[in-house]
Image 1 (cartoon, rainbow, N blue to C red):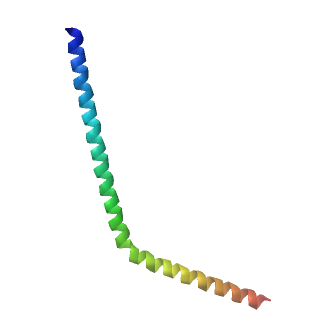
Image 2 (cartoon, rainbow, N blue to C red; image 1 turned 90 degrees about the vertical axis):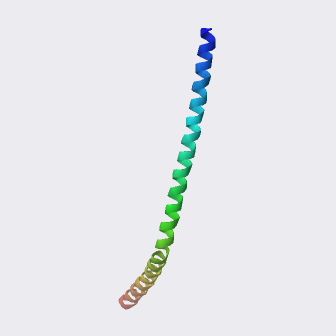
Image 3 (cartoon, rainbow, N blue to C red; image 1 turned 45 degrees about the horizontal axis):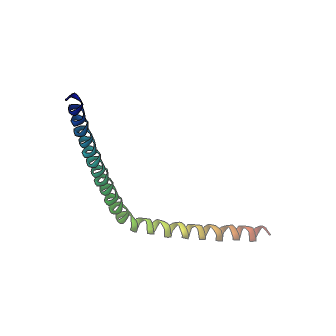
Length: 76
């Protein structure tokens, strides 16, 4: 009788733990989904600004190389 009771309690505990694990997985999945959606929105908002900054950086690097080449030419 006691063994059946313990086995029954253990079965209930195992089912409860499995349910908690499933809920945790769903919670983690939904939280990750929300973070991914937010990251996509942020990237979409920043993309025009990033394109502008990238273009400005490329132009600055070209200008820097031109100035360095002119300085080297003048020093020769």
